[in-house]
Image 1 (cartoon, rainbow, N blue to C red):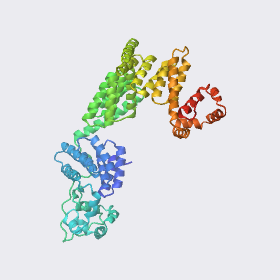
Image 2: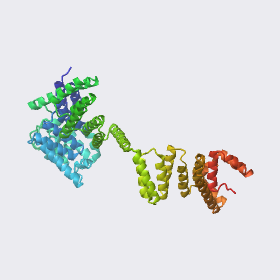
Image 3: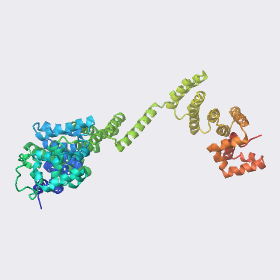
Image 4: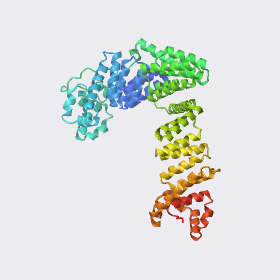
Length: 576
């Protein structure tokens, strides 16, 4: 079985031969055997970029930087991948980060210069690097062969007649370029013609097989310049000792973390805490270690320690630019710890802060539940029947003085203090009717009778509000409810008066329209149309036409009586 170093060597050989797919395969196998070796990720990133798989190249480059933050070449890989993705601003930032670790790196300086130029052209709205397809199409226009010969890196390609044939074919039809993209020489020539030759640091020989290389050097061709040696594929010897030590610590920290996770799942919290602390001593820059430590304290019921560890996680995450999701998780955990401590205000504060970092459904659910609980507690703490009675009495005095808005405010205060007293809703409904806030008045009447179904004044006040809205049939329904509950006839005069004015308004309304007009309007009203479409009501109406006295019997049924009142109010059925 091959070792990681042997597989890496095979990957390097495949890369040098231009077989990037095979190189990726070898590096991937090596990574499986040695997943903490940053060089392997760096080399695979270079191979991915060569195949223009910039998204995959970026992932490998980021892993390289994660494993070895002080290694400048990792930033070069990341910058190149971002450049390929046309994320020029991020590429500039990445190259700048790399230069902090190696200020003299020519590779990083050149990458930064190219990225800044591309970013500037992008801002100016020019084609630049952004209009890549257009540049590729134009690259082979004009005296291409002379340009290729003038460049020491590409001049040797012209010794191969097959290469010259491909160039002429592309000149004849730029769309033919896609047929030859597997020939690395064409790619190098294209970038050189586009003025981006430094993207490829290899010499011409690196892109030729032995069979392709010229046997003799033409005297008419310029002597090739010495090959650049950018160390495309890295070896272990390039890594500083301090970086090796850092990588070793990261590996040990990861092992301790795994042990902590296993202990946590087994609910062996003391052991989990020991392992997470060991991991933090080895790598205090990993936010997940602090988050896991906070989780252990939470499960142990040590909420203050949980909050402290989570706050440390946030601090570490900010300093080392951790993923916002990890920071959000720490804030959410603090919120849950405060919730357990019954500090709802602090819990809600941290849940909101968590959601600003990352909107997680579970945190949002917890926030909504706590906000509802806090509101309920505030309402419960405000309850006071004695103060509620006092507020209602003040409202009564203001109502008598015709100060309806002020009276409404006092009745609202009474409802907050004593929400189960039906009188408060009935009195506020009277105010709202005076203020012509009729739908709100009806809601208060309905709330009143839900608390006390025998509260007759709520029915009469509802009837008056509906009357003002010209909903005469529904007003009459409320009148009938008032009659039903007014057992002692204390409100008979008011009920009769309300009923009389409803029927009087219906008679006046019907006098202004013909039966045909009434039917037309009824059909446009969904409520009336539904009554007319009811087979039972159709039979009753037919009976009433042949025997008007039959209506008296039908009116004894509350549901039928209500429907008849609707038809009377609509002018379909006329009394008298």
